[in-house]
Image (cartoon, rainbow, N blue to C red; front, side, top):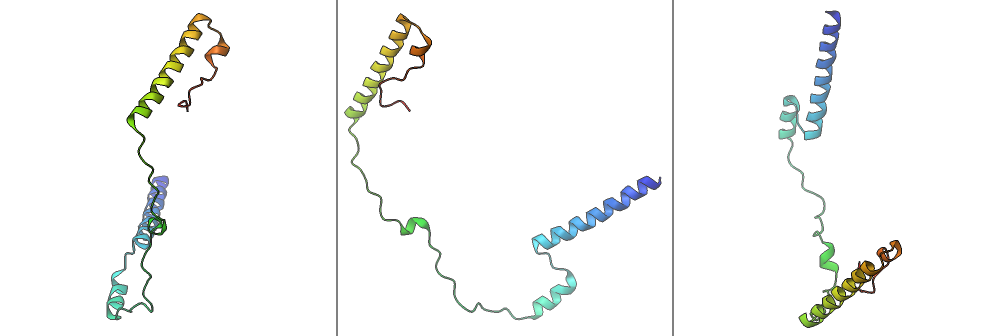
Length: 110
């Protein structure tokens, strides 16, 4: 019974500390202090804050590159597919671990 009461008292103390910390973090003002805060007039800032600037506003306009024609992209993809297919066929002819892990000649490989 004594142990139960001790745990209950420590739990209540922990709850009280948690409530005080929460009130301090959220800016909760006790009722006695609130009357004094409302009686004081609001102060104006001594100087105005500068206009907030973002990083994007300071950067120059991006240089736009002309779009790549669709035919050029299709030709690059076709060449890549042909090189990959040739690599697969050469592996099927003579499968070795070295040929499996060798890099291809395609520029599109990451």
